[in-house]
Amino acid sequence: METETTGQRIKQALKTAGVTQRELARHAGVSEKSVGNWVADRDQPKATHLAAMSSLLGVKGSWLLTGEQTVD
View 1 (tube, rainbow, N blue to C red):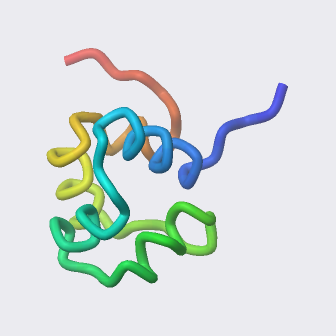
View 2: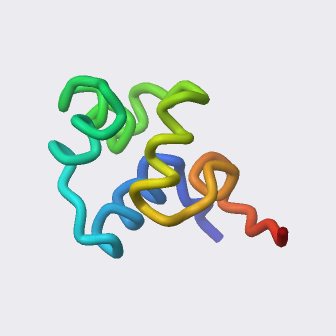
View 3: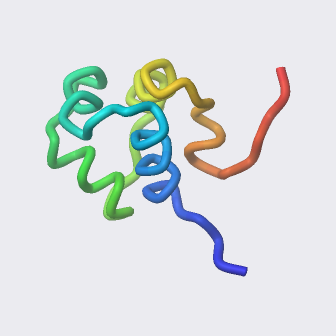
């Protein structure tokens, strides 16, 4: 079974939330190139960017990084 990457989960969350990479970049305070690098798995988002991404996309940062679902 192939493991989903952080970039694939970010891409999936963007699509589900109806948010563009440009909107995510603006919300997280990073360049569109940075978001593109995250989606392409060339780089990992920092904790502060994960928090901004999570709030905008309505997903947990831990899920974006690991794919693990956590329960509050």
